[in-house]
Image (cartoon, rainbow, N blue to C red):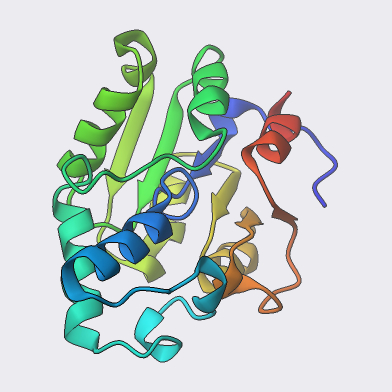
Length: 192
């Protein structure tokens, strides 16, 4: 576990699976649009969902693309506690979000819908389009810590000397030995 407090200006956050409950949207859309019902979050034990679900790759990609392109329209929900904690953090510093998504605008639209304008203005989004290139962006932003749900990304950051914290999800369980958090309440304790 992380023991030293992290100033909000020095920590960044991944978007999908950390701030936004992308799994809920994925499971809901799979059922509504493809009649692939009965999937539970704990069934998703691999970051590449078609490796652990009985689902064709083209269907998984179509669902994720829909969420990435229109996060508001697909009803993407925030992770429990993320709105409250990010609002608190934004009162102390700019909140930095670095996402592997290739498009920033759907993230901006989603944030603008959920947060009051004065809070949303305190958020910067970097959409870099590559899970394996976050280290470069995090360094350029001057961050010393980052929270991500992809264990491989966290291990890359750790090897590069960036304090990486894994946001626990079924797909990263038992795949790392890095510090982790289970909730946004735990993230609050890291920064306050």
